[in-house]
Each structure stands twice: as C-alpha cells, then as structure tokens.
Length: 58
Image (cartoon, rainbow, N blue to C red):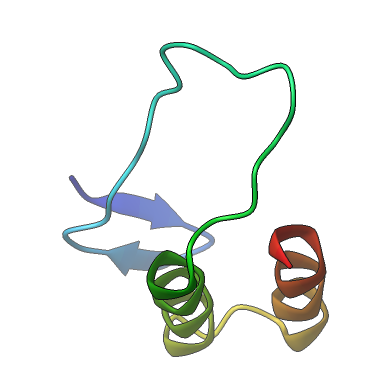
C-alpha cells in the first residue's frame, strides 16, 4: 500500500485493522515497540510526535 500525505509519498506501508478490541489496552512487546519508533524516526515524523508515540506505548 502507498500513502500520499502532505506532498510526500510513502511506499510499502503497513496498516492494521482491529478486529476484536480488548477492554484494556496492552503495551506492545519490545520488538514491535522498537519497529514502530524506528519507523517513525526514519520517516522523519516530528520529534514531539515521536515522543508522544513513545509515551503512549511505554
């Protein structure tokens, strides 16, 4: 899947759909946590957003 946002093209992105939402949100495992944060930084997302993402997942 490709995403075009604010003049930038993002190729081979992953999207997810929640099929059965839990009553309580669980933190991701360490591997997935690192993949998400590394992807956010690699894509050049703003630093405040990366910190917000970190705090939400931690």
